[in-house]
Length: 247
Image (cartoon, rainbow, N blue to C red; front, side):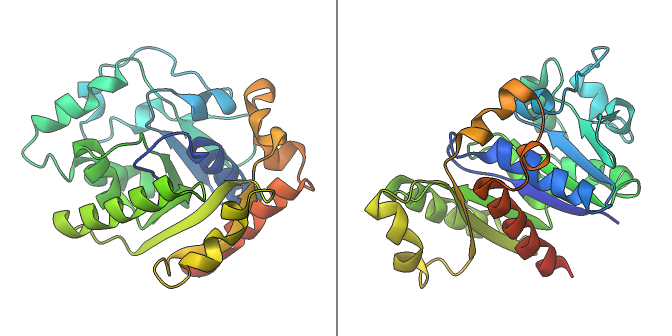
């Protein structure tokens, strides 16, 4: 059965989608049958991987057993598939609310996909919502990218409180620093200052880098186009830490 990793943040603009695509790409490069599920309405993960949704499918139909498998698409990369963002995906929460198992529906829908893949990486939309609860319950690991600022620190503890209140207990809850600018004192010192109150913080730190911004132009994972760049080496280190947790 597949390991499911959800890239999630309460707030946007933290490098979530680029991280989801690059980490999934590293799993594929390691020989794992890997699926990226683009749940963010901005559909950036689908764009990065040159994958269109194809024929429009009613979102309501996709929430039925095996409905998701019908729209999985291959990418140009070995071992890497995408469940692309779909037209009307913004309405998914409305349709979930109509279900008796509203808070657990996506976890059940993943089961058929988990038989086909070794890893499923979900790019989840930001915010605390019914959809977020579904995604968080479906995850073996919730992985939270954090810009090293006070606002990210605040949203991290909001998330932990939310998980506790909703009784959501992923097997692993981890965070990592991204968009790190080592010229800034706060960015340099953030990890050291928070090692005690954020024991979930992984060691790898992904620096701010134009090579990651250029993913939109190249429509390729940056770990494939420039693997020796420091930012992509950081993603490799991060992937190694994550992989070790599942070993």
